[in-house]
Every structure is written in structure tokens, then in C-alpha cells.
Image (tube, helix red, strand yellow):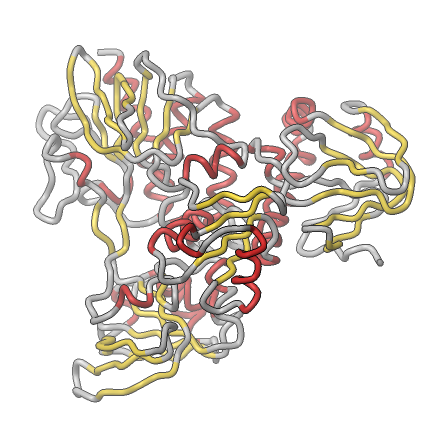
Length: 530
């Protein structure tokens, strides 16, 4: 098998001088044909740089990549503590340089070119693994709420996986019989090609993948950050880098709504754009490098004050204590008010447009409802996969809520058709979505469109149910800040701040959320020192 071409910078090749630099941080080892450098699911493995010979990357025994001299092995898990999702096997004998993770981080910190090169390659490799469907196998019914949640959890946490639908896949039933699992015990997750988990919880899945949430500490942290979207991650990075004992909590995954964005093109410093997933992964790695602790998944269920500190109650009975709190829980997308929407949830109706959802949209027509930036980003992204993208907007002009750069992309993309003054009234299909019925709210015209997926981006509501009346909210449910006696981002409770989309009056943009998260840290310092 020939060497895999370098796709988008995923497999860069180091020159002789660069190889010598890496060698100073590792150990040279001879290799023999058939040697396994690391296996899928290993808990402890090194970064490998090939000096000579070739190495094959295997997914469930199948060769999917081949690498030669000058290339390095590994994936994002080396930086985040996850086991690998592939197996590395020597095909042609030669020599490798093995660098332990601790020394790898040291090298990346001292040689910035190397750190940037490796991080970019690892991020792209994670995206390619997701697109390939490597990693976990999730087996279950599309009609199962628990199965839908598990798939969403894997997608939101950017875990490479392949979905096997028992309603659709002829081999799924025989596979379950072979595993000795009755349909009533689905969904099933297969790890490392052999370990079978029956209807696992989110905590169990992350623990087995090497990413257990840290146990809540009994002592008070300097700062609790509730929500790990852009505002929360910014607070984590700046708080921990300034020496604050910082704990971050999120109910589902890091990244928030921004983490599901296919491409953000108007974020400062990224002229070619950056995906929400990549921005999130970079921020998480950065926060951890500075010492921030992440408790994900960990849903906040309440906020209490007492003894000069605040206590955040967690789902499952745990609690966290902090001297200051940053509320960064953001907002969640609203659901479309049409009959039978829930029947197609995960079976054609989606609330995010990432590489995972794009796998279901190859060479089929899809619809998007919404007129904001999230809808525009989704339209541009899905146009690369679908045969046709229908964008339904209730308003009279895209410019009412969408950035100009996205409007220009849409206007110059022949695969995207925009329908203004249009609302979706009905959904139809047999098990899977097949058709949407729309109505023009100006002319009254009713039309039917054949589509295989519908993406809903119609605004958001703040995630504040867990606060249960402890902080002041405005008439739309967003957190009020900056009262007469309060600091600019501070709520009616001293030391409790709000940042990002959850805050009343905030600008609903990634850059402003990051800025508010950083500003909240400065204000937390001010409150702690009073």
C-alpha cells in the first residue's frame, strides 16, 4: 500500500534537522515488521516519529493510513489524555523516535513551530477520523431517546464513532445476536472492537475513554465557571493562567453552540476561518495546560450562598464550592413548533451542522430554517455535501440577522436556494424525514419539498433553569448584570458574574463571549481582593 497523501496538513513530514531536534527529547528504537507501536484503547503510549521504515494505521484490523520516514504518529488524544482510536503497526522495519507525552509537551512549549505543527495536524486528524467513522460503534434504534442522546453526546464531545441503526442495517440484528445483546438492552457501544457496553451512561463512557470528570473537591475553588462555551473557556484560560484555582462545569460537552459551528470566518486572527470544534479543542488544551480543572459532563442544578462562598449543586447529588462564580451557561436552540417534530429527532431533524451530521447529507437535498449566522454557516458548510440546500427564512431580508460575509457566500453558491417570508408547517416521512411543507407568510402559497434532513436554527433561549430565582433575570429570562452597587458583569449577588449569551444585553458573537469571559476574571479578582 502506498503512503497516504498529506491531506490538508494532517500528515506533515519533518526534515533531517527537525528530526534531530525531536530526537533530543526522545529515544531511538529499531522496529521490526509486525511490531505494534500502540493499539486502539491503550492507556499509556508515546509520540512516535518515523526515521525509516513504514507504519500502517489500522481501524478494526483494516489499514486506513500508511506513513513513511519523516512523519509522526498520534492524534489529539495524546494531548488530552484519551486512548488512541487506531492501532499503529510496523509494515517495513526501520527506526522510530519515541517521545513520552510529558517530554512532548515540553518540546512543544520550547519550540513554537513544532507545537503549532503538531496541534494543527492532530486537530485535522481528529476531523478525518470522525469523517471516516473510526472509533466507537454505537448500535441502536433511531427511535430510542437514550440512543439519540448517546449519539449527540459523542458528536458534541467530538468522539470518533460510527452509528449502526438496527432499523436500517441488515447486519445490525445479527451483530447483536453475536454479542448476545437483546434489542431491549440497546443502545450498545463497542469499544476497541471488542468491549461491549450496554446502554452506558455518559460518565461511564468518558471514564472508559480515559477522560473521567475530576471528583468535586471539598475545599472552595477561587472561581467556578458554569458552562464551557467560548465565554466559559475564556474565563478558564485567563483565570487559571493568573493563578486562580479554577473549576469548569458543563452538562454535555465543551464548546457550547460555537463548538457545533462548521466554520467561523469572522473571528479575529483566523482569516481563513476556524471550525468551532478546533477553536474549542485549542481552548480546552490551553486551559488544562494552565491548570484549570474540567468537570464534563456535570449539570448544575442549583446555586446557594453561605459562609462567604457559593455552592453549586450538581446532577446526581454532588456539589462544588467557590469564592466566585461565572455564569456562562449560554443558550439552547429553540425547537420548531410543528406537529411530529420529535418523531424525526435524529432521524432527519438536527440542531447542529457538524461533520457528524454531514455524513447523513451526502448527495441528498436538505433544508435549513433560520435567518441568523448559525443558519448561514450551516448552509455554506452543507452545500459541500448535499445536492441542494433550501434555506427558509421567516423574515424579508437575510441582512436582518446575518453577517454580510455569509450573505455573500450564500448568494454566490449555486447549491443554496433562499426562500424569504417562508415558514415550515408540516413534516412527512416513513420513519425518516422525506418531505417538508412550507407556507409563504406574505402570499399564503403552500409548497412541498423533498428533503432528507432539516436543520433548525431559529434563535435560542437562555439556560437559566438551574438558577431557580437566585439571580435577577430580565423579562426574556437572561441574567441581569451591572446594577447600582455591582461590578459591570456582576449579578445582584456579589462575586457572581455572567458572561456570554446568557447575559442580558450581550452581543451574540463568539468574539464578544470570549472578551466577556476574560473580563469576568479581572472582575472576579477585584471582588476577591475587596
